[in-house]
Amino acid sequence: MIIISVIAFSGPAQSDAINGLGGGGMASADLWNLAEALFYAIMFVVTLFGGPIVSKLGLKTTLVIGSITFPLEGIALYVVSRWAKAGPFLVVAEAIAGIGSGCFYIAEAGLVLSLPETNKRGAMLAIWIVGRNLGQLVGGAINLALNSQTSSSGSVNPNIYFVFIAIECLGLPAALLIKHPEQVQRKDGTVIRAGDKLPLKQELNMLLNGTVLTPIIGLIAMFSFYSFFYISPYGTYLTEFFSVRARALSSLISPTLCIIACFGLGFLLDMQSLNQRYRAYLGFIVVCSCCIGTYIWTLVVLSDLTRTPNVSIDWSSSDYPRSFLPYFFIQSAGPMQQSFCYWLISSFGSDVQSNTRMGGVFRAIEAAGQAVSYGLMSADNVPLWAGFGANFGLLLVSVFPMVFALRSVPKEGQTIAMSQDEVVAHNENTDDAREKDKVIVK
Image 1 (cartoon, rainbow, N blue to C red):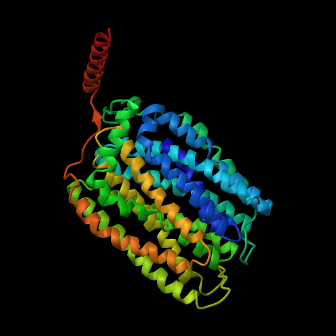
Image 2: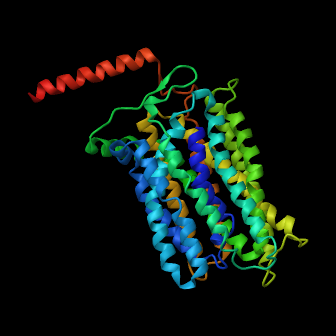
Image 3: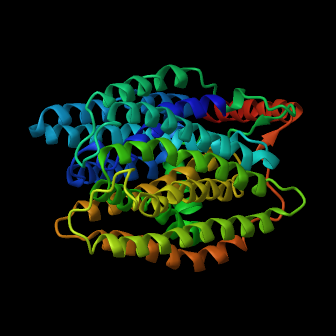
């Protein structure tokens, strides 16, 4: 999990830090929202077929392909910040990055859902989330150092993108250190059940009938669709109403509460004194309470800000704490929800390949939510109210099917581990099956 966290630190964390600048650090969020909409639309297609892709390429190869594309985002933003007419380059770079990130996310999902022991899933998922937030802290600190004197609105110092590019380049060597899941041995001596490698046609059938069309996917889909939807409206909110250095400060301090909150949620989800289903209910209540409270506060603040023309809130402004805190809290509530979603779907997995299929489908649903969100916020004459209204509405609509989904959570955690004796027996059975296949062919 440490190596996965390092890769997340160098890739998704830096992307989150760039989003923390508001509009990718540009003076206007329109081009960024358009490029991100395309990025997530392409990522949706790639992650949807995550199971078959990993079955053919393997988790490690898929992870390496994804990490190669990490620096594209920083490079494209630097080019656009220097040459205003290079907007198409940003769009093309984000399209290519969407393919790579799709590969990374399906491999990452399969690993983070499969590696932890059943009674440590909450804590391990928290470590994964924290890895992403530490990356934001590093990027945010450097960002603040370069932009601390800019008290007006506009774009950030272009040199900040060199820092992001350098960190994003660390993803590839870290990905090369990853072992195949079946080679990993846990502290309790067990190894991970990888699952059978199926032909492409059978893998596609399992994806459709064994994952996409299952009732549990239908019940959790809306909650997953919503879980990343908030990023675009809040990024646009930051761009429209805050100065450059206030946005830079936000990219530094926003991850701090998230680290504490995710570990707290992980502790709750790992409490062995309660059965798994009760822990699922408690986690859901905590996450929803945080999200609903933050959205109500946001709508109240937004109502006041939209009445005042040409608002540019600096950290020295008296309105800064009240206006910034909703953004600060959603940067914790959102990752808490994402961590909870992955803990929840890992409750239903039986092996690495089934977790990869399930994780890929959920990544696809999340990507679809982000694509719609960024597309909505990039459209002309769409008020910020529309983004927040859609966000809040999705949360409320997703609550009711989630209640039914939680009733399906097994009371006791399932294991995808095998003892060493079981591994030997499994390998012998596999070899016997292969010999029979050879005889039949002859």
